Amino acid sequence: MKFITVENYETLSRKAAAIIAAEVIAKPDCVLGLATGSSPVGTYKNLSEWCKNGDLDFSCVSSINLDEYTGLDGSNDQSYRYFMNNNLFDHININKDKTFVPNGKATDIKAECEAYDNRIKEMGIDIQLLGIGVDGHIGFNEPDEFFTKETHQVTLDPSTIEANARFFESIDDVPKTAVTMGMGGIMSAKKVLLIANGQNKKDILEKAFYGPIDPKVPASILQLHPDVTVIFSEN
Image: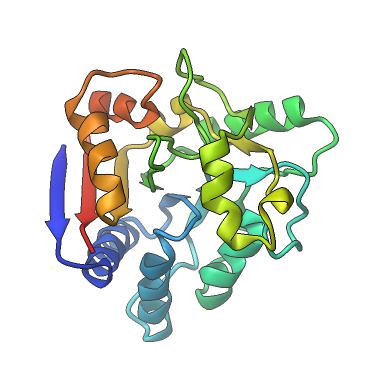
């Protein structure tokens, strides 16, 4: 594991974007595992600017996202498909037909999860970008008694709902369930890049990477991955 501490969010975002950009340059048809939330916004902004300037070409790249709220259509401005379009896909020359986000509106969520796992196996993930929750969740894999391998529907922890309430008009509007890539999909990535910003993430990073491997701290499973880079900014 490589642990990098930087001085601020802007530096974190540039370093994370540079790692992803290096993957795209080295393998133009790579598969990027992507994340949502506030942490990767700066990373996506840098990638968008570099593409606009002609320094990066995403025309042969594919992507597969970690998760999506249950019940939200991709046109909903709080859905993760909308987030990805708004923060990255609309600003780079990627073929959107090769960008995949779980279908939270699927009539058969179990079948959607199985199909998503098959897609992950078929495509493979070259580098998986992750954030981390204050409770250690990655994707929407919440603290539990066991690690869930497959893509699955999850009931969101109250702390996750509270953390995401800032994106909605009220906490009551936050969906209570989501579809998330399981630990098997995340761990199948050839490389993992985890970014964390702020003092409130310091304790959980220590628990996740220097404490015991425990499903109650979901990110701790990454200790078993052979190629993990963590970038942490205190400010």
